[in-house]
Image (cartoon, rainbow, N blue to C red; front, side, top):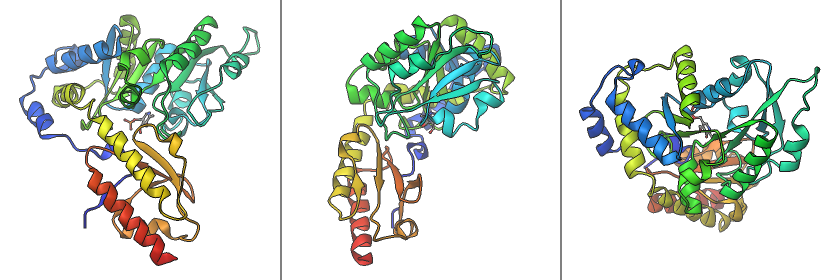
Length: 344
Ligand SMILES: Cc1ncc(COP(=O)(O)O)c(C=O)c1O
């Protein structure tokens, strides 16, 4: 029985072309900036994001943390959406290591924070207050079901933040999914923000790595923070080589993952008892609830070889990716349909 693993796009394995590129990669010591493959990856990433420079980091979590360290000082306050990955799944690093106060603003279901709320939350300069210095956004929005922030929204909210002297960081772990969904270059979605981080190791299928992009000056500072965190990697060209293939070859195929997410969502609503908001399925993530008539859905689905990530008792996240075909999605739906019918 094939295991149909819908837990995350992070489970994607490198392609044969990536492995070949890794084997052949020209290498050097990247802490001394002497790894030509890392240098090429950073140049390519900066160019694709429309930024002056980029820094290769081991993970999206480290990219986000370095962005906070670069844009703030200990004691500052940062504004983060209530459903943000940075808030939920990054171990509180911004507070623990960056010494900042994390102030949360409600995310709507489309992953946005409301501009008026942002404006009201920014602290006036006053002796009692920590200075509010950074606004963090997320595109696509993981906990909001892969929701896409448009360039118009990003631009308006970034402009507002800039007017108040804040910087703006975009957690664009899946920004290429947003770009494909909106049919715009990723650089347009990143243009309004001061820094953007994106991941190679999710839908793009590379084994490791993220890029933090911004101005030359901020990336130089970020490089120093990366070193302090122990993220200075030596012959990192071995993994950067896969990242170059990811950026050159794997972006446009994300459309297949989006089509498969849509196929999954459409199929789920046809099985009695599943609740899915079809209009919210914009990219490769489908949030849904399973039927109350199958309380042991979790072990049952697992026993039938369909894996999900569980957000809460009834809330489930499914993520489509390169290692699952349309046929696999149909097979998963058939197994779930059988599960529900046999339980009923
Ligand atoms: C929106 C978002 N940001 C950041 C990350 C962190 O990436 P990493 O797992 O590489 O640390 C993830 C990982 O799933 C994510 O979904």
